[in-house]
Amino acid sequence: MTSGRSFYITTPIYYPSDVPHIGHGYTTVAADALARWHRQAGDDTWMLTGTDEHGQKMMRAAAANGVTPQEWVDKLVTEAWFPLLKTLDVANDDFIRTTQERHETRAQKFWQSIYDRGYVYAGEYEALYCVGCEEFKPESEIVDGTGPFEGLKVCAIHSKPLELLHEKNYFFKLSEFQDRLLALYRDRPDFVQPESARNEVVAFVQQGLKDLSISRSAFDWGIPIPWDSSHVLYVWIDALLNYATAIGYGADDENFARRWPGYHVVGKDILRFHAVIWPAMLMAAGLDVPKGVFAHGWLLVGGEKMSKSKATGIAPETLVETFGSDAFRFYFLSAIAFGQDGSFSWEDLSARYQAELANGFGNLASRTIAMIGRYFDGAVPEPGAYTDVDLAIQRVVQDAASRADEAIERFRIDEAIRAVWTIVDELNGYITDNEPWALAKDETQRERLATVLYTCAEGLRALAVLLSPIMPQSTAKLWAALGADQALGTLAEQPIREVGTWGVLPAGTATQALAPLFPRIEQAD
Ligand code: MSP
Image 1 (cartoon, rainbow, N blue to C red):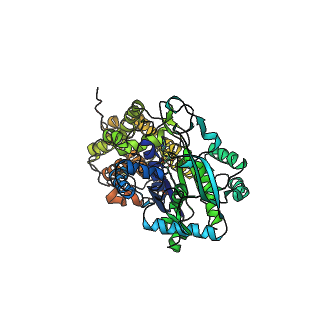
Image 2 (cartoon, rainbow, N blue to C red; image 1 turned 135 degrees about the horizontal axis):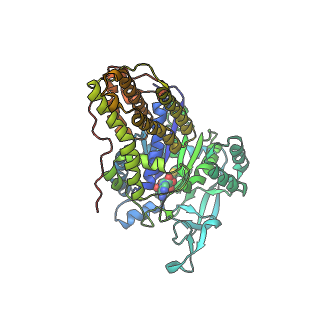
Image 3 (cartoon, helix red, strand yellow; image 1 turned 60 degrees about the vertical axis):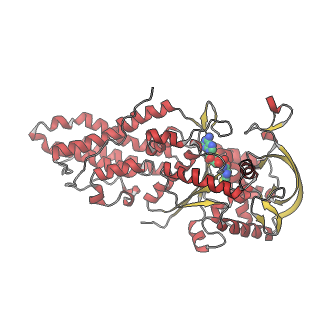
């Protein structure tokens, strides 16, 4: 069911030494929801996630745990990072690890090509390095330490002391790309989204770019530089390449041409790497730049970025165990404007679960299926003549479907969900206004009752399709309860961009009982 239009989307690759928290989960489900939407639309979709396994941070953590770096990352990836995808019901097409052979050889090939094109030179380097960020810090992110770090220079993000490094390094001529990057941001205003992120990147590049150190020689946990094996690739330079190596750069030209260029969803903390350094690397290699980079905001706890180093990380399983993965996905993708920061609170999640999922969507589904069962023996009724109120619902569905698709094109998942939710709200109001339970008592209203319940069932059909990228599990249950599996085929086969067409669910389709989609949560006191 592919349209041929390629949609390749990635998450950042995560440092496995951090235990996954809901901030990582947020990025991952956002990319997954976008991928599922496009897949459901018939686009030639590919979703990639993975882990970033080299660098000094990983080497030190392994040493502190008395194991080799490879043993250390293998354990973390297997025990924490693969399970995260299951917990959050993520349908990634591939998972790349930067310690895989496919990545290492292709990354070397990439750098050899940039070297051969004359964009690399050797030089001396001395600067302050933050191991937490795995980055030489610019002036603007160096601050004076306080408390135990009084008198030292610390990283503004990690509040930990910086290390003065002096090494022979290889440099990438990033400074040569300033004009081409500025032209890119100018010619393609949506290359970096949202607008605030774009402005930040443009201002940064306008200040001038320094050449970038791309190698380290003080340790060896990394990919050897192809022309000088006493150096390893700087971990960020190695990591960014995953987006190309995973789809066959340097090995499978056909697949690479099919997928590339793609879109990157990243947290705003790593925007510059993706919107400045990565496109410059691609330009140097003579390849297309990404289609776009979308920077989302941070999940905040107590007004600060949630992070493991500050002990504010919340494990995704904690929320999923109580509310389920659909609610996790729905909550973070709808409650936070995609691109802005958002505060998580247990109370807010509980309140939205109850109001929007249990009382809103869940109840609409339960009562529609129950009434079709009770009044029409579980067969979707044949609608009679439509009145204005029925036609208004049809327009709401059509309008919501096209507004949602348009919002997804802009990566605004929250707006898409808001548009879809108009169907939930309008249909619940429609049931209240039309009182099918009262119509059922009057034999002369039989046809009207059929029209009302058909309208509800068709609305639910559209909702199941439109919400399936966000809540795959509950929508699959609803799809089965509507009998749509039998009548229309699997939910995954339903083309999302045509979902607004009315009258798809055939009258006579046999419905099945539906357990509550979002059961009541017993609150622990
Ligand atoms: N390994 C690098 C990325 C390399 S990509 C070529 C890295 N990894 S990370 O594990 O530290 O973080 C990855 C991403 O996790 C962030 O960019 C962001 O998308 C997400 N988040 C981490 N903490 C977050 C919040 N508190 N809130 C929202 N997202 C967060 O950086």
